Length: 192
Image (cartoon, rainbow, N blue to C red; front, side, top):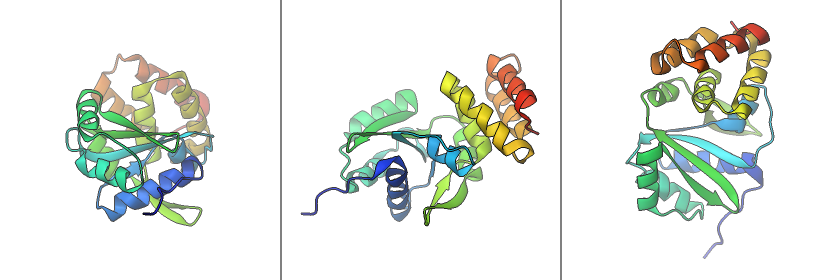
């Protein structure tokens, strides 16, 4: 029996996971720091964020893919956690793998707008810069705000700030503090 593959860092893990999901016909997009890097904002990371565009309770195909890579995942635990939190966590050779499922309507928009790109000669689907911004605003942690400031500064008018704002307002309402913070980031860092 061939021993499980051990990834050489988060990028290698993300790209290997992407290839395995594609081979299995599971729609996905890499997010987090890996997507930030595609959009010109490199940041070190020790984990992989992947959006699997499957309904929250329908994680069996994703778990099967993870298992082909040697990642141990309890299907029922993944299903329960996904239904409760819209994500589940696996570990691959000590590396955290966050699998986000389609727990909100915007997930399907993120699938529609994902972008295919090649990194180190390997192609994969990544969240669009705008979808990444929306998800980071939903999480609204200090590291997400820092990522957004850099993303807006680097992308400038190539980032559709109005699109991000529109989807955020649709989900959270005009008075949500995330909307005000987004407006501030765009004003300070030069988005469209």
